[in-house]
Length: 267
Image (cartoon, rainbow, N blue to C red; front, side, top):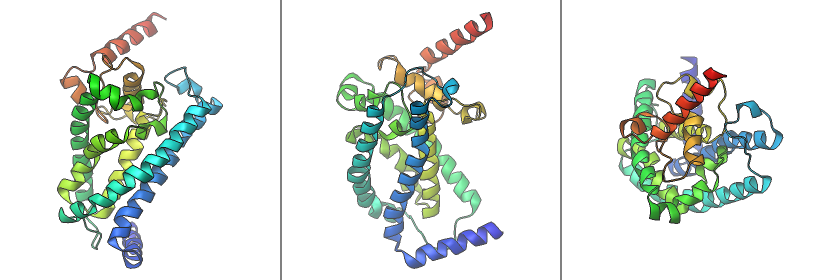
């Protein structure tokens, strides 16, 4: 009860001192940038220093120049692509029911909506991502993202502007359909950013979510997608593994895992 009261007090302060437009656009942008760079930079630092090298999935590491190029392009894309798109989409979100007023939504409503967003996003992302691996779209659009065959956290959003719009649709379609409270939208942004940074981190730690969540793909699952030739990569889902399993686009990954397990037993 004390936590709920504190949360309501904090939210009252925000809606009293800032307009809904400011919170929905600038607030969301600041939250996204903060969570993205704070969660994405560590894996680049690990590569630079060699820290946690025993948990690194690939032996190869990115150069400092590659890190710098990625960061500079990301800042440019976020300011000149993401922010304008967020601003332009605000009226549509308002029309669909986005609100910032009190009372705050019940935790169960937030939970169900976030779960729905993850499932819907993963479904839409799978088909959009799979389309991006067709010859023309890969060559002209998706190859930018695959410049990093050895991904690190920040590469999760390193992509051609067209791809940012194309696959960004998968992220916003859930909230657009349900018209959530702004606090639910913020929580969704935070969780989605943390998830995509984790699967691009290039590290599989003992505490990685994939070790505890049965349907979660994780860094190993997505890392395979980056290091294999685009026509054979598979593993197109963003979060879960069942779409690739259902449509047989994880066969190469499964064969590799089986081979690694066999070699491990022989050793």
